[in-house]
Amino acid sequence: MTAQIIDGKATARLLEKELALEAQELQKERALVPGLAVVLVGDDPASRTYVNNKERACKRVGIYSEVHRLPGETSQEEVLALIHRLNHDPAIHGILVQLPLPKHISDKACIQAIKPEKDVDGFHPISAGNLLIGDKGFVPCTPHGILVLLDRLGVDLKGKHAVIVGRSNIVGKPVALLLLSRHATVTICHSRTPDLGLHTRQADVLVVAIGRAEMVTGDMVKPGAVVIDVGVNQLGDKLVGDVHFASAQAVAGAITPVPGGVGPMTIGMLMKNTIQAARWA
Image (cartoon, rainbow, N blue to C red; front, side, top):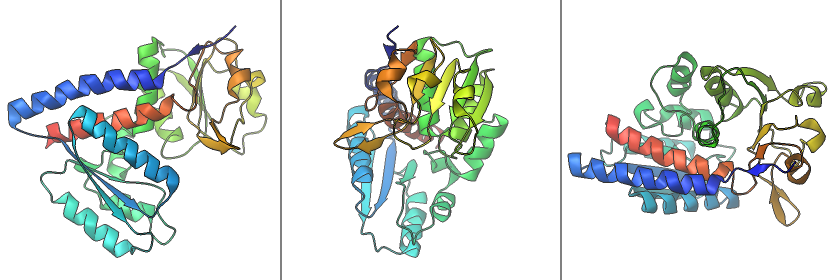
């Protein structure tokens, strides 16, 4: 068996075309251009690349974008003051603080400073609470992108056993809630789970977001499973995921590559959340 490659890049481009039409409708109906502000502190190469990709996506979709690039020594007070100003800027509907931040700046303080109605990353405690109880709100972009990939692949999650490797607030926990909302049976594993393979081999849908290069190998995958690899790791001169792609591809029914799998969908869902924020404004 050779698994079907789940092309996140192609899916994201289709999504962007749909979103571009939505942005055009907003401009015609309400003379409103969705606006996204990104705050980037420091010069982390990966963060810089992500922000550049987000800028390009905004141009393709028709979203007004501004990036506030701040030096690494910027104080937390200065970052919070910028967020406060953006909160009250009517041209900005979504605010994203690029993580990770320098160690002297609190991620939590910055996320909580963003108005919930502009929290297009879906990280604010109010957004997290809305997701937990199933109320309207912003869904974190990577988990939402995973769900869209599964939907467009035609995966019926009802009654499926989904196993998630990783329990972060950004991916693991929210994707568990989304899968539960689709009536999947969900198991969450993490770094202290004994005999990880015992659990992953039971997964009809396996989502891996542990941050360890090629940690999940083919012998840990159930034959025919859908494997979603969220990890992005530098291994030598190449980028690899948290799943050993070649061995998993030989067993799985479908699998996301790294790069070109989940990553483009994360940016696509950020565009979707920004347009939604403009609609709710």
